[in-house]
Image (cartoon, rainbow, N blue to C red; front, side, top):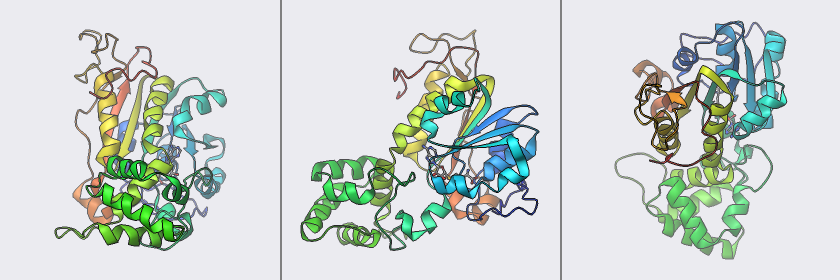
Length: 337
Ligand SMILES: C[S@@+](CC[C@H](N)C(=O)[O-])C[C@H]1O[C@@H](n2cnc3c(N)ncnc32)[C@H](O)[C@@H]1O
């Protein structure tokens, strides 16, 4: 792993499979500001880029959660470097509260989430995430449960259209759904190439950008298969429940479907104005704010970072700092204002 950034996670000669360049790494570490003795949750361990940088920044502990068994296995060599300071935790960050308490830990000092898929997941054709490489139509981060092929071959036309429209923001969702249903009456859709070609047959190529017409449909099916928005909503509440006062949450999102819920959650639960002060009026739902916003705006990558890592172009980081107030829990009240 080459973290091309001024913060280079150490590897001390231990071999860790490379492949994912961490995005906004310096900004995440600055936001979390790791301290000696602190406990930090990396809810999206991936290639371990953030986890290593946190461990290198202070004499602290990182609980590295990932739902992909390959990601957990890829980080095992790091145990040789960091010993008990790194705990590898298979599971979903939506269950963070339970996972952390299951380790006998009641509160943590920081939480970070780097949403979406990692480069190794996209680059390995057999994982079925990519329309650029032919492989089985899978897309399951966890490698179990309902696959993309199950969804594409069994969902109703209206459900497919809804998924593609809402999670892919695809204007031609109805056409895509109709084409999928038509194609599967002839032959089961088993591969990424089959699906990509079906979509390319009905979605026009943009004259302005070079984006493959299958991009939005693949995004939609992936988000649906992995319930990524549900996970994010549960993960934000989980972070609120386990962060101690003054503990920081840093979330890196790659598109507006992910960024919007983070922004709405932090804004509403910080009292709407981001100050989260005891002297400010209560939040709209009449509760004391659970968060302060150290930075109001999303933080985006520098030109230097985007030139080295084009994948970082769409990244946006939002940061929240926990107040002393109790968690609002799972209420949705006001969250999507
Ligand atoms: C963008 S990568 C993270 C990269 C990491 N920050 C690094 O520096 O290497 C996202 C990772 O999060 C994992 N992931 C996505 N959603 C998850 C969830 N709900 N729970 C746990 N892990 C998740 C994916 O399996 C993937 O390994």
